[in-house]
Image 1 (cartoon, one colour):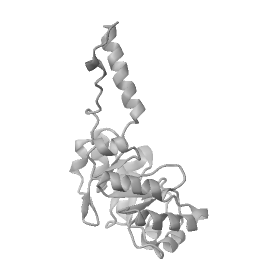
Image 2 (cartoon, rainbow, N blue to C red; image 1 turned 180 degrees about the vertical axis):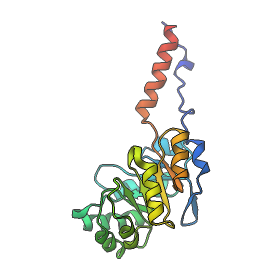
Image 3 (spheres, helix red, strand yellow; image 1 turned 90 degrees about the vertical axis):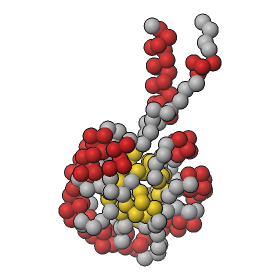
Length: 221
């Protein structure tokens, strides 16, 4: 079977930031009004998807070198992961300092961290702290008082409910939240009080698989 070159001109143009995100009010980070936050460390996604900002969160050892690559490449505000947790206060402080030196617009604490530890971290860094809420038992008012600047809600199917709960406790606190891939869930999250939406794109492998599956289906017809 002979295949034309055009058969291999795959494109991810159908994958973009959901337009429903633009219905959010936005949150201010420095001079930037942020509505859409792209959750990725993949430079091809950063280049191709037109989000207002990037959130570079990953499960590996924190690296100021990686932060700088993403900051320099993106030309948009970048929120860098600094870990967190009860046992990693010193490492979190050092990671935050390195991230800000690399040009981060804000740092993200991505592990549950007690308010007193947040307070200690806050005393040593000047830039914005984003705190990821992963479960409902977080001490929201205490974390806010300790120095959190923005809450990032990621409680799965309960995200909209958690956003509403946080809004009731600290009405003036900016909130960003995962909205899921559908306009309906994004709008529900915005109505619940989220000022900005975090968009987690499919992986490059998933996108390529969908193109190849579609291509095979067409060739078999």
